[in-house]
Image 1: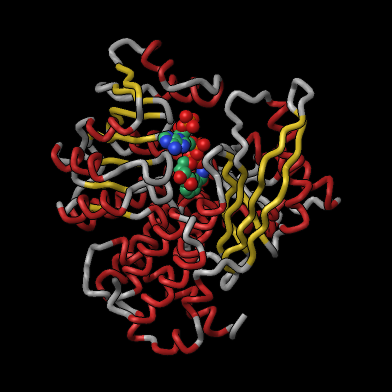
Image 2 (image 1 turned 180 degrees about the vertical axis):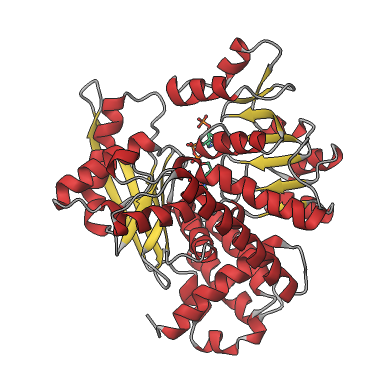
Length: 449
Ligand code: NDP
Protein backbone atom coordinates (compact mmCIF):
# COMPACT_ATOMS: atom_id res chain seq x y z
CA UNK A 1 0.00 0.00 0.00
CA UNK A 2 2.79 2.45 0.88
CA UNK A 3 6.11 2.88 -0.91
CA UNK A 4 7.83 2.47 2.45
CA UNK A 5 8.11 -1.09 3.75
CA UNK A 6 8.49 0.33 7.24
CA UNK A 7 5.12 2.11 7.09
CA UNK A 8 3.46 -0.99 5.63
CA UNK A 9 4.75 -3.07 8.52
CA UNK A 10 3.63 -0.58 11.17
CA UNK A 11 0.20 -0.21 9.57
CA UNK A 12 -0.30 -3.97 9.39
CA UNK A 13 0.65 -4.30 13.04
CA UNK A 14 -1.94 -1.75 14.20
CA UNK A 15 -4.67 -3.32 12.04
CA UNK A 16 -3.85 -6.61 13.72
CA UNK A 17 -3.83 -5.07 17.16
CA UNK A 18 -6.88 -2.78 16.86
CA UNK A 19 -9.06 -4.22 14.09
CA UNK A 20 -12.22 -2.80 15.66
CA UNK A 21 -11.15 0.84 15.60
CA UNK A 22 -12.17 2.10 12.13
CA UNK A 23 -11.93 5.85 12.80
CA UNK A 24 -8.49 5.47 14.37
CA UNK A 25 -7.21 3.34 11.48
CA UNK A 26 -8.65 5.83 8.96
CA UNK A 27 -6.80 8.73 10.61
CA UNK A 28 -3.50 6.81 10.73
CA UNK A 29 -3.86 5.64 7.11
CA UNK A 30 -4.31 9.21 5.91
CA UNK A 31 -1.29 10.50 7.82
CA UNK A 32 0.89 7.60 6.62
CA UNK A 33 0.08 8.50 3.00
CA UNK A 34 1.79 11.82 3.64
CA UNK A 35 4.66 10.41 5.71
CA UNK A 36 5.36 8.01 2.83
CA UNK A 37 6.84 11.02 1.04
CA UNK A 38 9.46 11.70 3.74
CA UNK A 39 10.09 8.53 5.71
CA UNK A 40 12.86 7.26 3.42
CA UNK A 41 14.90 10.39 4.17
CA UNK A 42 14.91 9.44 7.87
CA UNK A 43 16.32 5.92 8.35
CA UNK A 44 16.97 6.83 12.00
CA UNK A 45 13.19 6.74 12.63
CA UNK A 46 12.92 3.03 11.95
CA UNK A 47 15.96 2.29 14.12
CA UNK A 48 14.36 4.19 16.98
CA UNK A 49 10.95 2.55 16.50
CA UNK A 50 9.64 6.08 16.17
CA UNK A 51 6.50 5.47 14.12
CA UNK A 52 5.52 2.43 16.22
CA UNK A 53 5.74 4.65 19.30
CA UNK A 54 3.96 7.54 17.59
CA UNK A 55 0.85 5.48 16.74
CA UNK A 56 0.55 4.04 20.24
CA UNK A 57 -0.99 6.39 22.84
CA UNK A 58 1.19 6.93 25.90
CA UNK A 59 -1.77 6.14 28.17
CA UNK A 60 -5.43 5.15 27.76
CA UNK A 61 -7.85 5.67 30.64
CA UNK A 62 -11.33 4.19 30.62
CA UNK A 63 -13.62 4.63 33.59
CA UNK A 64 -17.14 4.26 34.99
CA UNK A 65 -19.22 7.43 35.34
CA UNK A 66 -22.20 6.77 37.64
CA UNK A 67 -24.74 9.53 38.25
CA UNK A 68 -28.35 9.96 39.35
CA UNK A 69 -30.96 11.40 36.94
CA UNK A 70 -33.87 13.69 37.85
CA UNK A 71 -36.14 10.69 38.43
CA UNK A 72 -33.72 9.32 41.02
CA UNK A 73 -32.57 6.50 38.71
CA UNK A 74 -28.90 5.56 38.63
CA UNK A 75 -27.30 5.95 35.18
CA UNK A 76 -23.90 4.61 34.19
CA UNK A 77 -21.83 6.01 31.32
CA UNK A 78 -18.33 5.25 30.17
CA UNK A 79 -15.60 7.89 30.37
CA UNK A 80 -12.32 8.06 28.43
CA UNK A 81 -9.12 10.04 28.45
CA UNK A 82 -6.45 9.17 25.91
CA UNK A 83 -3.14 10.81 26.78
CA UNK A 84 -1.68 10.46 23.35
CA UNK A 85 1.67 12.17 23.11
CA UNK A 86 3.59 14.48 25.47
CA UNK A 87 6.77 14.99 23.43
CA UNK A 88 6.29 18.75 23.01
CA UNK A 89 4.11 19.66 26.01
CA UNK A 90 1.45 18.47 28.44
CA UNK A 91 -1.37 16.44 26.87
CA UNK A 92 -3.95 18.86 25.51
CA UNK A 93 -7.28 18.25 23.81
CA UNK A 94 -11.02 18.45 24.31
CA UNK A 95 -13.70 16.31 25.85
CA UNK A 96 -16.59 15.05 23.72
CA UNK A 97 -19.95 14.06 25.20
CA UNK A 98 -21.94 12.24 22.49
CA UNK A 99 -23.57 8.79 22.23
CA UNK A 100 -21.20 7.88 19.36
CA UNK A 101 -18.09 8.21 21.58
CA UNK A 102 -15.99 5.06 21.88
CA UNK A 103 -12.29 4.26 22.14
CA UNK A 104 -11.75 4.37 18.37
CA UNK A 105 -13.21 7.88 18.13
CA UNK A 106 -11.21 9.20 21.07
CA UNK A 107 -7.98 7.63 19.79
CA UNK A 108 -8.42 9.10 16.32
CA UNK A 109 -9.08 12.50 17.85
CA UNK A 110 -6.03 12.25 20.14
CA UNK A 111 -3.83 11.21 17.22
CA UNK A 112 -5.01 14.14 15.08
CA UNK A 113 -4.71 16.49 18.05
CA UNK A 114 -1.02 15.65 18.48
CA UNK A 115 -0.26 16.84 14.95
CA UNK A 116 -2.60 19.82 15.21
CA UNK A 117 -1.07 21.05 18.44
CA UNK A 118 2.38 20.76 16.92
CA UNK A 119 1.26 22.97 14.02
CA UNK A 120 0.16 25.75 16.38
CA UNK A 121 3.84 26.21 17.39
CA UNK A 122 2.71 26.31 21.05
CA UNK A 123 4.09 23.80 23.60
CA UNK A 124 1.18 21.37 23.76
CA UNK A 125 1.14 17.59 23.43
CA UNK A 126 -1.93 15.69 22.26
CA UNK A 127 -4.83 14.13 24.15
CA UNK A 128 -8.58 13.69 23.92
CA UNK A 129 -11.37 12.38 26.10
CA UNK A 130 -15.09 12.18 26.57
CA UNK A 131 -18.03 9.98 27.25
CA UNK A 132 -20.99 8.30 25.55
CA UNK A 133 -23.22 10.55 27.69
CA UNK A 134 -25.78 12.49 25.63
CA UNK A 135 -26.45 15.94 27.13
CA UNK A 136 -29.36 16.50 24.71
CA UNK A 137 -32.67 16.68 26.58
CA UNK A 138 -30.98 16.52 30.00
CA UNK A 139 -31.69 19.19 32.62
CA UNK A 140 -28.94 21.53 33.86
CA UNK A 141 -28.94 19.62 37.15
CA UNK A 142 -28.40 16.27 35.37
CA UNK A 143 -25.59 17.73 33.26
CA UNK A 144 -23.98 19.10 36.43
CA UNK A 145 -24.18 15.77 38.27
CA UNK A 146 -22.76 13.96 35.26
CA UNK A 147 -19.86 16.45 34.92
CA UNK A 148 -19.10 16.18 38.64
CA UNK A 149 -18.97 12.39 38.49
CA UNK A 150 -16.82 12.46 35.34
CA UNK A 151 -14.36 14.88 36.96
CA UNK A 152 -14.23 12.93 40.21
CA UNK A 153 -12.32 10.26 38.31
CA UNK A 154 -10.50 12.47 35.82
CA UNK A 155 -9.15 14.98 38.37
CA UNK A 156 -6.35 12.64 39.44
CA UNK A 157 -5.03 12.41 35.88
CA UNK A 158 -4.97 16.08 34.81
CA UNK A 159 -3.22 19.32 35.77
CA UNK A 160 -1.59 22.34 34.15
CA UNK A 161 1.70 20.47 33.64
CA UNK A 162 0.15 17.05 32.97
CA UNK A 163 -2.97 17.11 30.86
CA UNK A 164 -5.27 20.02 30.02
CA UNK A 165 -8.79 19.15 28.77
CA UNK A 166 -11.22 21.57 27.06
CA UNK A 167 -14.56 21.40 25.21
CA UNK A 168 -15.60 19.60 22.04
CA UNK A 169 -18.94 18.24 20.79
CA UNK A 170 -21.48 18.39 23.63
CA UNK A 171 -19.05 20.18 25.95
CA UNK A 172 -19.40 23.96 25.92
CA UNK A 173 -19.12 26.74 28.50
CA UNK A 174 -21.74 25.24 30.80
CA UNK A 175 -20.05 21.84 30.99
CA UNK A 176 -16.53 23.31 31.35
CA UNK A 177 -17.81 25.42 34.27
CA UNK A 178 -19.19 22.36 36.09
CA UNK A 179 -16.05 20.33 35.33
CA UNK A 180 -13.74 23.07 36.59
CA UNK A 181 -15.82 23.62 39.74
CA UNK A 182 -15.52 19.97 40.70
CA UNK A 183 -11.80 19.85 39.81
CA UNK A 184 -11.07 22.85 42.05
CA UNK A 185 -13.02 21.29 44.89
CA UNK A 186 -11.16 17.97 44.64
CA UNK A 187 -7.61 19.28 44.30
CA UNK A 188 -8.21 22.24 46.63
CA UNK A 189 -6.27 24.59 44.34
CA UNK A 190 -7.30 27.31 41.93
CA UNK A 191 -5.27 25.76 39.15
CA UNK A 192 -6.88 27.59 36.24
CA UNK A 193 -4.43 26.28 33.64
CA UNK A 194 -5.71 22.72 34.14
CA UNK A 195 -8.76 23.25 31.91
CA UNK A 196 -9.42 25.68 29.06
CA UNK A 197 -12.60 27.13 27.62
CA UNK A 198 -13.46 28.47 31.08
CA UNK A 199 -15.85 31.35 31.69
CA UNK A 200 -14.27 34.82 31.60
CA UNK A 201 -14.72 35.55 35.36
CA UNK A 202 -12.67 32.50 36.36
CA UNK A 203 -9.69 32.52 34.02
CA UNK A 204 -11.18 32.02 30.57
CA UNK A 205 -9.74 33.84 27.59
CA UNK A 206 -11.67 36.37 25.59
CA UNK A 207 -12.14 35.10 22.01
CA UNK A 208 -11.77 31.42 22.99
CA UNK A 209 -15.46 30.81 22.24
CA UNK A 210 -15.07 32.30 18.77
CA UNK A 211 -11.58 30.94 18.10
CA UNK A 212 -12.16 27.72 16.15
CA UNK A 213 -14.71 29.24 13.79
CA UNK A 214 -12.83 32.52 13.37
CA UNK A 215 -9.53 30.68 12.94
CA UNK A 216 -11.07 28.48 10.23
CA UNK A 217 -12.04 31.58 8.26
CA UNK A 218 -8.61 33.18 8.78
CA UNK A 219 -6.98 30.01 7.44
CA UNK A 220 -9.40 29.80 4.48
CA UNK A 221 -8.79 33.50 3.71
CA UNK A 222 -5.03 32.87 3.52
CA UNK A 223 -5.54 29.94 1.14
CA UNK A 224 -8.00 31.91 -1.02
CA UNK A 225 -5.63 34.89 -1.15
CA UNK A 226 -2.38 33.05 -1.77
CA UNK A 227 -3.62 30.22 -4.02
CA UNK A 228 -6.52 31.92 -5.85
CA UNK A 229 -5.92 35.65 -5.38
CA UNK A 230 -9.46 35.74 -3.98
CA UNK A 231 -11.41 36.19 -0.72
CA UNK A 232 -14.73 35.48 1.04
CA UNK A 233 -16.24 38.68 -0.35
CA UNK A 234 -19.32 37.95 -2.41
CA UNK A 235 -19.08 34.16 -1.89
CA UNK A 236 -21.92 31.81 -1.02
CA UNK A 237 -20.95 29.58 1.88
CA UNK A 238 -22.50 26.34 3.17
CA UNK A 239 -21.68 25.42 6.77
CA UNK A 240 -22.67 22.09 8.29
CA UNK A 241 -23.44 21.91 12.00
CA UNK A 242 -24.78 24.76 14.12
CA UNK A 243 -22.68 24.30 17.26
CA UNK A 244 -19.75 26.29 18.56
CA UNK A 245 -17.50 25.97 15.52
CA UNK A 246 -20.25 26.44 12.93
CA UNK A 247 -21.77 29.49 14.66
CA UNK A 248 -18.56 31.49 14.80
CA UNK A 249 -17.39 30.36 11.38
CA UNK A 250 -20.69 31.79 10.13
CA UNK A 251 -20.16 35.06 12.00
CA UNK A 252 -16.63 35.57 10.67
CA UNK A 253 -17.67 34.57 7.13
CA UNK A 254 -20.26 37.30 7.15
CA UNK A 255 -17.82 39.85 8.57
CA UNK A 256 -15.52 38.99 5.65
CA UNK A 257 -18.28 39.60 3.11
CA UNK A 258 -19.56 36.05 2.52
CA UNK A 259 -23.21 34.93 2.61
CA UNK A 260 -23.97 31.79 4.61
CA UNK A 261 -26.84 30.11 2.77
CA UNK A 262 -27.24 26.82 4.71
CA UNK A 263 -26.55 25.33 8.15
CA UNK A 264 -27.55 22.05 9.85
CA UNK A 265 -27.79 19.92 12.96
CA UNK A 266 -27.90 16.15 13.27
CA UNK A 267 -31.59 16.06 12.20
CA UNK A 268 -31.62 18.27 9.12
CA UNK A 269 -30.57 21.51 7.44
CA UNK A 270 -32.00 24.93 6.69
CA UNK A 271 -31.49 26.96 3.53
CA UNK A 272 -31.84 30.73 3.58
CA UNK A 273 -30.65 32.22 0.29
CA UNK A 274 -30.70 35.76 1.71
CA UNK A 275 -28.16 34.73 4.30
CA UNK A 276 -28.68 33.01 7.66
CA UNK A 277 -29.96 35.41 10.32
CA UNK A 278 -27.26 34.91 12.94
CA UNK A 279 -29.07 36.62 15.76
CA UNK A 280 -31.95 34.19 15.28
CA UNK A 281 -29.60 31.21 15.03
CA UNK A 282 -27.73 32.17 18.22
CA UNK A 283 -31.05 32.59 20.03
CA UNK A 284 -32.25 29.13 18.90
CA UNK A 285 -28.98 27.30 19.57
CA UNK A 286 -27.38 29.16 22.49
CA UNK A 287 -30.38 30.29 24.52
CA UNK A 288 -33.19 27.89 23.68
CA UNK A 289 -31.00 24.83 22.88
CA UNK A 290 -33.62 23.97 20.22
CA UNK A 291 -33.41 22.14 16.88
CA UNK A 292 -32.45 23.96 13.68
CA UNK A 293 -35.90 23.18 12.27
CA UNK A 294 -37.19 26.03 14.46
CA UNK A 295 -35.22 28.48 12.29
CA UNK A 296 -37.35 27.65 9.22
CA UNK A 297 -40.52 27.83 11.33
CA UNK A 298 -39.65 31.35 12.45
CA UNK A 299 -37.83 32.91 9.47
CA UNK A 300 -40.08 33.44 6.46
CA UNK A 301 -38.48 32.50 3.13
CA UNK A 302 -36.17 29.84 4.60
CA UNK A 303 -36.67 26.10 4.12
CA UNK A 304 -36.03 23.07 6.30
CA UNK A 305 -34.92 19.69 4.90
CA UNK A 306 -34.90 16.52 6.96
CA UNK A 307 -31.55 14.62 7.04
CA UNK A 308 -28.15 16.30 7.05
CA UNK A 309 -26.25 14.87 4.05
CA UNK A 310 -28.32 16.82 1.49
CA UNK A 311 -26.70 20.06 2.62
CA UNK A 312 -23.78 19.49 0.22
CA UNK A 313 -26.23 19.72 -2.69
CA UNK A 314 -26.93 23.38 -1.84
CA UNK A 315 -25.10 25.50 -4.43
CA UNK A 316 -22.15 27.37 -2.95
CA UNK A 317 -18.62 28.61 -3.60
CA UNK A 318 -17.12 27.52 -0.28
CA UNK A 319 -18.04 24.62 2.01
CA UNK A 320 -17.12 24.55 5.69
CA UNK A 321 -17.97 21.16 7.25
CA UNK A 322 -18.20 21.93 10.98
CA UNK A 323 -20.25 19.06 12.49
CA UNK A 324 -18.57 15.66 12.88
CA UNK A 325 -16.33 12.99 11.39
CA UNK A 326 -17.18 11.42 8.01
CA UNK A 327 -20.11 13.74 7.47
CA UNK A 328 -19.26 14.32 3.78
CA UNK A 329 -18.95 11.27 1.56
CA UNK A 330 -18.03 10.99 -2.14
CA UNK A 331 -21.59 11.77 -3.20
CA UNK A 332 -21.61 15.00 -1.18
CA UNK A 333 -18.21 15.95 -2.59
CA UNK A 334 -19.38 15.27 -6.16
CA UNK A 335 -22.42 17.50 -5.59
CA UNK A 336 -20.14 20.36 -4.46
CA UNK A 337 -17.89 19.92 -7.51
CA UNK A 338 -20.88 19.76 -9.87
CA UNK A 339 -22.16 23.03 -8.40
CA UNK A 340 -18.87 24.77 -9.12
CA UNK A 341 -17.53 25.15 -5.56
CA UNK A 342 -13.94 26.41 -5.25
CA UNK A 343 -12.88 25.17 -1.81
CA UNK A 344 -13.59 22.95 1.19
CA UNK A 345 -12.05 23.88 4.56
CA UNK A 346 -12.62 21.52 7.46
CA UNK A 347 -13.89 23.01 10.72
CA UNK A 348 -14.70 19.60 12.20
CA UNK A 349 -12.17 16.82 12.75
CA UNK A 350 -11.98 14.41 9.77
CA UNK A 351 -15.40 15.43 8.34
CA UNK A 352 -14.52 14.17 4.85
CA UNK A 353 -14.28 10.47 4.07
CA UNK A 354 -11.10 9.48 2.17
CA UNK A 355 -13.26 9.10 -0.96
CA UNK A 356 -14.65 12.61 -0.54
CA UNK A 357 -11.12 14.03 -0.18
CA UNK A 358 -10.08 12.25 -3.38
CA UNK A 359 -13.05 13.74 -5.29
CA UNK A 360 -12.35 17.26 -4.00
CA UNK A 361 -8.62 17.13 -4.65
CA UNK A 362 -8.82 15.54 -8.07
CA UNK A 363 -11.31 18.21 -9.18
CA UNK A 364 -8.69 20.82 -8.23
CA UNK A 365 -10.64 22.48 -5.39
CA UNK A 366 -8.80 24.05 -2.49
CA UNK A 367 -8.86 21.63 0.44
CA UNK A 368 -7.63 22.07 4.01
CA UNK A 369 -7.63 19.30 6.63
CA UNK A 370 -9.08 20.07 10.07
CA UNK A 371 -5.79 19.54 11.86
CA UNK A 372 -4.59 22.73 10.17
CA UNK A 373 -7.73 24.75 9.51
CA UNK A 374 -9.48 24.18 12.87
CA UNK A 375 -6.34 24.57 15.00
CA UNK A 376 -7.41 28.07 16.09
CA UNK A 377 -9.45 26.64 18.96
CA UNK A 378 -6.62 24.80 20.62
CA UNK A 379 -4.19 27.61 19.79
CA UNK A 380 -6.38 30.00 21.75
CA UNK A 381 -6.63 27.43 24.53
CA UNK A 382 -2.82 27.63 24.56
CA UNK A 383 -3.14 31.41 24.87
CA UNK A 384 -5.61 30.89 27.74
CA UNK A 385 -2.99 28.75 29.52
CA UNK A 386 -0.39 31.49 28.96
CA UNK A 387 -2.69 34.12 30.47
CA UNK A 388 -3.42 31.83 33.45
CA UNK A 389 0.32 31.39 34.06
CA UNK A 390 0.95 35.12 33.73
CA UNK A 391 -2.10 35.89 35.92
CA UNK A 392 -3.15 38.39 33.33
CA UNK A 393 -5.99 38.75 30.84
CA UNK A 394 -5.50 40.04 27.32
CA UNK A 395 -8.18 42.02 25.47
CA UNK A 396 -10.39 40.42 22.81
CA UNK A 397 -8.48 42.30 20.12
CA UNK A 398 -5.09 41.12 21.41
CA UNK A 399 -6.16 37.48 21.44
CA UNK A 400 -7.91 37.75 18.07
CA UNK A 401 -4.81 39.33 16.53
CA UNK A 402 -2.57 36.57 17.92
CA UNK A 403 -5.05 33.97 16.60
CA UNK A 404 -5.03 35.46 13.15
CA UNK A 405 -1.20 35.50 13.15
CA UNK A 406 -1.08 31.87 14.27
CA UNK A 407 -3.47 30.79 11.50
CA UNK A 408 -1.40 32.62 8.90
CA UNK A 409 1.74 30.89 10.22
CA UNK A 410 0.03 27.48 10.13
CA UNK A 411 -1.03 28.09 6.54
CA UNK A 412 2.50 29.13 5.58
CA UNK A 413 4.06 26.11 7.34
CA UNK A 414 1.65 23.73 5.57
CA UNK A 415 2.26 25.33 2.19
CA UNK A 416 6.04 25.27 2.64
CA UNK A 417 5.99 21.59 3.65
CA UNK A 418 3.77 20.73 0.67
CA UNK A 419 6.34 22.37 -1.62
CA UNK A 420 9.21 20.50 0.04
CA UNK A 421 7.33 17.24 -0.52
CA UNK A 422 6.96 18.03 -4.22
CA UNK A 423 3.20 18.66 -4.14
CA UNK A 424 2.78 22.42 -3.77
CA UNK A 425 -0.65 23.39 -2.47
CA UNK A 426 -1.54 19.94 -1.12
CA UNK A 427 -2.31 21.23 2.37
CA UNK A 428 -3.12 17.76 3.67
CA UNK A 429 0.39 16.54 2.94
CA UNK A 430 1.77 19.83 4.23
CA UNK A 431 -0.15 19.65 7.53
CA UNK A 432 0.70 16.02 8.20
CA UNK A 433 4.39 16.40 7.42
CA UNK A 434 4.94 19.77 9.13
CA UNK A 435 3.03 18.60 12.24
CA UNK A 436 4.85 15.29 12.41
CA UNK A 437 8.42 16.55 11.89
CA UNK A 438 8.38 18.64 15.05
CA UNK A 439 6.95 15.83 17.19
CA UNK A 440 9.44 13.39 15.63
CA UNK A 441 12.39 15.65 16.41
CA UNK A 442 11.29 15.97 20.05
CA UNK A 443 10.70 12.23 20.38
CA UNK A 444 14.10 11.41 18.87
CA UNK A 445 15.81 13.80 21.29
CA UNK A 446 14.06 12.32 24.33
CA UNK A 447 15.13 8.71 23.74
CA UNK A 448 13.00 5.59 23.93
CA UNK A 449 10.22 6.68 26.29
P1 NDP B 1 -21.00 21.33 19.25
O1 NDP B 1 -21.46 20.26 20.12
O2 NDP B 1 -21.03 22.74 19.70
O3 NDP B 1 -21.78 21.26 17.85
C1 NDP B 1 -21.77 20.12 17.05
C2 NDP B 1 -22.71 20.34 15.87
O4 NDP B 1 -22.57 19.27 14.95
C3 NDP B 1 -24.17 20.36 16.27
O5 NDP B 1 -24.89 21.17 15.39
C4 NDP B 1 -24.55 18.89 16.12
O6 NDP B 1 -25.94 18.68 15.93
C5 NDP B 1 -23.78 18.52 14.89
N1 NDP B 1 -23.45 17.07 14.91
C6 NDP B 1 -22.82 16.39 15.89
N2 NDP B 1 -22.68 15.10 15.56
C7 NDP B 1 -23.24 14.98 14.34
C8 NDP B 1 -23.39 13.90 13.46
N3 NDP B 1 -22.95 12.67 13.76
N4 NDP B 1 -24.00 14.15 12.27
C9 NDP B 1 -24.44 15.40 11.96
N5 NDP B 1 -24.32 16.46 12.75
C10 NDP B 1 -23.72 16.25 13.93
O7 NDP B 1 -19.50 20.92 18.81
P2 NDP B 1 -18.35 21.82 18.20
O8 NDP B 1 -18.93 22.86 17.32
O9 NDP B 1 -17.47 22.23 19.32
O10 NDP B 1 -17.54 20.75 17.35
C11 NDP B 1 -17.83 20.47 15.97
C12 NDP B 1 -16.63 19.81 15.31
O11 NDP B 1 -15.50 20.68 15.40
C13 NDP B 1 -16.19 18.49 15.95
O12 NDP B 1 -15.67 17.65 14.94
C14 NDP B 1 -15.06 18.91 16.87
O13 NDP B 1 -14.16 17.86 17.13
C15 NDP B 1 -14.40 19.99 16.02
N6 NDP B 1 -13.58 20.94 16.75
C16 NDP B 1 -14.09 21.69 17.79
C17 NDP B 1 -13.29 22.61 18.43
C18 NDP B 1 -13.83 23.52 19.47
O14 NDP B 1 -13.08 24.43 19.87
N7 NDP B 1 -15.05 23.38 19.93
C19 NDP B 1 -11.86 22.75 18.08
C20 NDP B 1 -11.45 21.99 16.92
C21 NDP B 1 -12.29 21.10 16.33
P3 NDP B 1 -26.86 18.21 17.16
O15 NDP B 1 -27.02 19.41 18.03
O16 NDP B 1 -28.11 17.78 16.50
O17 NDP B 1 -26.12 17.08 17.83
